[in-house]
Length: 243
Length: 243
DNA sequence: CGTGAGCTTGACTTGTTTCAACCAACGTGG
DNA sequence: CCACGTTGGTTGAAACAAGTCAAGCTCACG
Image (cartoon, rainbow over all chains, first blue to last red):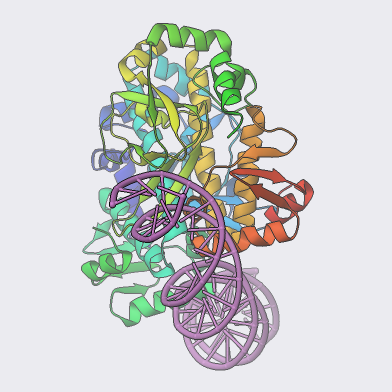
């Protein structure tokens, strides 16, 4: 994970904010707002090792976690243990904007890698929102984006084949990492375990392994020590059935 | 559809509002708010026949449709025509609260049966929201509920069997109709075509038919002319794998 | 050095889809 | 009022995608 420093730097400089595409939010709409936030709210920074839970479904939180470094994932669980990852959380991502209005978190969040995150106090954020009402438009963008992501996931789970789903997951991460300038010539950090890919796309570990092997064999992607290179982007797009 | 009158009455009296469970919203948190809304906003009422689109994905709307009578459904479509119904919209349901902040609707909405709905002007609603800031808490409840529904759907599509999914769909509709007092001793109107159930749960028409036949054969449900009776609620719960 | 987590591979099973034929109900136009 | 096409539902056989089971491998780590 050579570009850890790059990740920290991006976030701390607010670069991941200015670079973020329309609809993506990083709790900082531009450098100034981000600096204001950090100054006004003095969020507490926390670090948690890989695979450890950041918070559990049903828990009450007075603060909203925002991912700063590396990856986390939010997941729901059925009573019998079946799990679905709702979203892979990248640096700059707010864990759940519902936490601005409700203290109970509906899903659990866990670290994919070692993760650094900041807790923004809800009350502070709310008063800030009242003082700077223009932030509402940013907020609504995050809201809408969260909902769109959820709808898109449902569509993929309900109507796409395993190949399509996995290709789409890769393309989605690639797009989001590109926006954060975390992709150098088609290569990106890819710390996800097969187990997590399976949970994210409603598949089994075994099948994920088979599909990814097939992608590699076909020369579409390449993976080595927790990083992935897209060798044939049009090919991957074709498999994913997009655009 | 014998209780059409009941449905109209419920909505027009605001009964579906007072009866709605925590987290459910009907654009009217209690009778007074609803009357205020109707008086202040003079929404235009529209009627549309079954199977006809109310609006299409990508369209720009200056008004937010709210279902008044009968059922509608929101759906997303893949470029090759595969479809997923995101949500079955019942009387009192707002089509998409994202429309409060964004004019482009991300999915299409179509009438399941003949449907009556009202269009609430976005600008009017926004000024109302500014004048009555306490409405924000109602709004956030709808928001959060919409997101939870979407996450729940993803979980079901990703991790539940066909039997479970269909049982859960039935239970979900039963719960929501109960809250609107549209269920008399376990019997409810059920205008959904197999085709729509399939699109809602990511299955094929043929398989839906087989699963429903099996439910009937096992004496769990009973269906006749567009209405469904749950004969064995605990049994259905067991199949659905809930609680 | 042993242990456990993660990945791969092959054989087999199963749930769901696909294909196809058929039936019932309904509305429309002759 | 009948003939007809259309839409929606049912059923069975065959095909297929993904899951399950099982074994073996690598690698990191205490």
